[in-house]
Each structure stands twice: as structure tokens, then as C-alpha cells.
Amino acid sequence: MGPKEFYAIRERLERIRKRDVVSSSMGIIPASIDFLDHAIREARSDGQKWHLYLITVGECVTCRRRDLEMHYRRLRRSEFPDDPFVVTSFAHALAYDEETRVEALAVAHEAVNAARARGTWIRYSVTWLARVATMVGDDEALTEALRQLIDEGSAWREEDYHLVTDFLDQIAPGRVDPALLEAYRLLAASDSDGSA
Image (cartoon, rainbow, N blue to C red; front, side, top):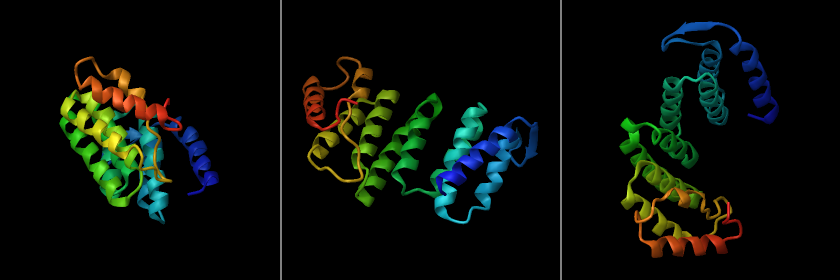
């Protein structure tokens, strides 16, 4: 899906969203989400379907329908289980709900495994594992993620992420070894874009 097609859909959603709701197999839903659901089912390629899921999740957020957002995130993950971005995004979304936090951490680990299997976006996925572990309060997973990031420190890939420190401020003192945190901070500072 090219940018022109992407923006055409976004413009169409603005008009459709102003209409009423429709009845669907998922109950009463905004017409814009029903439109996107049909578009996903009629997608001509995996690439088009990938982008349509992305737009649909965003539309669910815009319409403030968390139930539908999570429904489409689950569908997207089942269709693209080896895509580190899709799986990481799903883990992050799960981490916001108390009842799905255990699942969030398991899915974040799956994202790292998917990235390692592909050989791309490993730092990205491990960084999100650290963020999810921080959100759900799992110090063991957070320590593991920091160690993995340190181990990945010198292994730069063209398709990857710089080491970042934004999530470190969310870690309460005493949750992880201060020496490990300092080692990661130093490594991130030496990375070309590590201050993000």
C-alpha cells in the first residue's frame, strides 16, 4: 500500500466516522471500523493487509473502542506472528491492562524470539521487552532485557534500533542492580543516537 492509497483511506475514514454506527458480527460498531474490517478481508496482499490492520487499530483508538482495538491487535498478531513490530506492539498494548500483564510479558519474549529468528530489529524488540517488563513490574525480565541489550551493544544491524534510555527513568531505585543500569547507560551514551 503506497502513501497515496494510505492517505485516501484516512480521508475516507473522516467522512465515514461522522456517520452512525452499524450492526456487525462484533455487535454495534462505528461505521469506519466496519469499513476497515471489510477492507482487511478483501486485501489483495499481505502488505496491504498489514497496513490496513495498522489503520484499523488506530481507528479503534480514535473511536475509543479498546475492546475492538485489542480484537484487531490479536487478529493482526495471528496473521503476522513472525513480525517483530506487530508482536511488540501487541505486547505493549497488553501491558496496560492488569488482567493481561502476564500475557504481555510472554508476548514481548515472543517478539524478541521473532526478531532473533529474522536477524533484524533485535535491539528494538529487546528494548520493548525492557519497557513491558518495567510496566508490569517484572524485575527479572527487566534485568534479562538489560543484559541482552548490553550483549547486543556492539552488534549493529542496518535494520535495528539505537540503544535508548527513555525507559530507565521509569525504573524505581532498587529494582535492578545499579551496576547493570550504569553499564547500560554508558553503553547507550556511546551509541550514536542513545540519548533518545
